[in-house]
Length: 95
Image 1: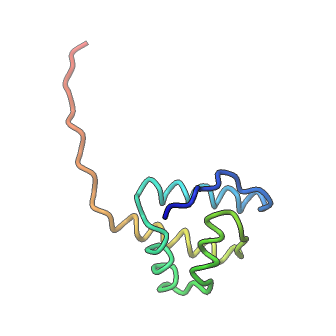
Image 2: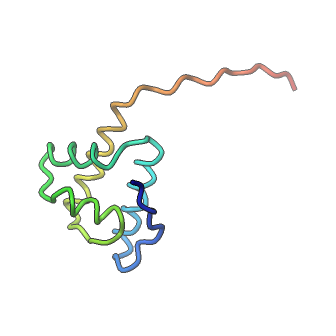
């Protein structure tokens, strides 16, 4: 079952809003499921449960800065492990 994603981060401080929007964008672009993010986050020392992380990603719950930073770090690790995209062919056009 897919939940509608909340586009706004109303009620969160500006810095947290920006960090959350960046995290959402990175996860969506890389196709990383929330479950994978939480598992990596928890494995590197994250202290917040899966339910709270899900609520944070849905803009329903605020997280301390350290926990947000660990989520971002976990996302970066997962993105770094993705296979590289194939290079685009270059064209040699003469002007």
